[in-house]
Structure formats: structure tokens, C-alpha cells
Length: 174
View 1 (tube, rainbow, N blue to C red):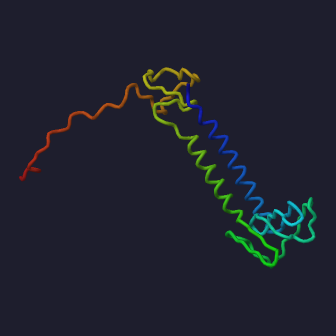
View 2 (view 1 turned 180 degrees about the vertical axis):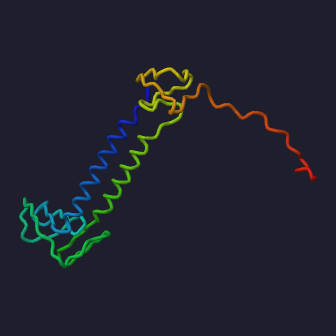
């Protein structure tokens, strides 16, 4: 049975790229807006100032509220993890750029792995072509290898031939 990994890697690459794109758009939107989602009467999930996190005692937010507020021009963006707790009002945030970069890197890795072809395998389905003639199509998917594609190996790699005799005294002086 062939190793049908390539389509799965491509799907994961698209999922990771989509997540990275959504996070990037969210990061850009938090320059102008803060988004609040009440979890209960004392805690809210917040996305704003380039970060996401939990806000304790949000004040004025009922237990089922979703609120969008403009970001104040004087407020700073969060570029790293931060936590604070003063008199029952606290927050814990993580920067949005971190998962954005992580998902973009995973998407790039998945695309690289999906595009890579192993020698001796069909570039379409990954079927092991060792032992087959070079002109024969893949028995699994029917794809014919072109001249620009590497031909499959017909036998395991042979050890190198006999080495040239070495001169134990070094090169001859002339």
C-alpha cells in the first residue's frame, strides 16, 4: 500500500496557513478595536492590543455579553506575555504574533514536506518503485515518470568498487 502522505500534508499546510492568516488579521484589527467575550460575571476573554487573554472583573460586562470597543490611541500593544493582578482586577495575556508565526512556520514546513519527493518513490502517490523498469508507469496510480524526474533505483545501492592502490610512502618525489 502506498504512503499517501502528500495530500494530507497539503491539507494541514492549508489549515495552518488559514489559521496564520486569521490570526494576522485579528492582530491588525486589535490596533483599532478590543473584543470582549464574557465567560461569567467576573471573567472575560479579551482580544486586544495585539494580545489575547483573560481579564478578571471586567466591570460593566454581564455574563453573556460580547462587546467591541475602540482602542484608545494612547494604549500600548502587548509584545510578550504579561500578567497582573491588583485589587481583584487582573489580567493574563499572550501576544498574538507568537501563534501567528508558529502556524505560518508549520504551514511552510508542511508545504515543504508535501513537495519533497523521496528517491525511488512515485512523486504522485509515494508508492515504492524499486525493482520496476524505468519506463513503466506506477502500478498504484498509473503516473508515468518523465525524463526530468529521477528514475527509480532497480536494486539496492551497491558498495563502491575497489579503491585504487595507495602508496604507503606518500607521493613520489620527483
